[in-house]
Image (cartoon, rainbow, N blue to C red):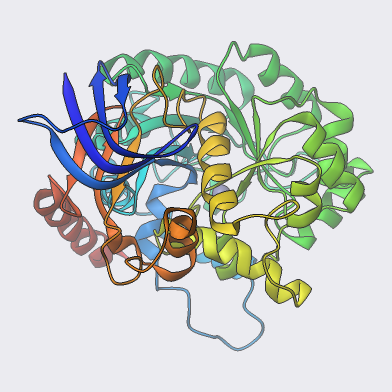
Length: 454
Ligand code: ZN
């Protein structure tokens, strides 16, 4: 059993002082407010439920900073994607693992306890499967094991280059599976999960309406037994017009009309929605998987936030391309994207209230739901996904408890994070992952080897 003593804790019922938390088998088994710490307790300042990072393509971290140079002509999401394809030509399994371990470590140091890995890099560079079909899924799981992060692994069905079953392009051969091979891969990945702690999960991820077909979508959903289902949707205007031309409706509209979308779904981005699509999506209970830093970086556009929140929609955040891994930056970019578009302030809150608290607690609940993870709030019986922050940091020291999450979201950096537990696994202490040196050294070596090949 592990025990934590927190001067202040954000429990599901509100703020509490001098709280002792006992954790057993990854879950919170007792919570005692207004008590004293005991010898051996890990003592922290302020303890919060930790967020899930609901959308990551870990390998893309390695190209961060390499696509910010303006070339003749207009740079776009699609030129960024071309570079990403060139990059994937050379990645080896060892490199995939080293990059993922760095990414997960950075997520934990930023205050995330878990990650949804939307994993579409499956095969060898020439498109042939590895001897073990799940070689690269295995490497993602190894990285999760190494770092201790809570993993929801989401193998991706990626079959076509565009709507209308366009054949894959040369840059996409490492991603490709038909439904039959995908189902095999998924079953093997589920079996491989046995090597990870109990809180880890698998789910499925049809890549997008571009990369699957309506018939394949029906087949793969029929094969799903449990676990979450994630899909990229309506990220770019070009994608909206392609789906509209090929399937006769806008992406979110088409999905909601043709598939039984419920609260086990997570719709990644959902950037370009009409108000009606936004209301219809909110009513399904599906989580909007928002990736504000990446969406800003790729020029995707802002989410229809006020309408979605007003309709009681559920959202969470993800770091997607991992160009920057920062929990506070994701949440504040989400709000700032709304302010810049609406020429307004305090948009992401329904009615009156703290924007920071709405964003933080909303993303905690929505993120956990999207990952099929029994966490998202600080209560007995829940997984011990917890983050401690230092409220004595100059960015926060003048704030009351009620202002603290506003301070965290708008005025602080991730450096205020002191400790993180993923289902009770205490891997960040004094702001540093306990395996940081080894993970960084492996990453540097992987990048040296990779860059020599590019
Ligand atoms: Zn993505």
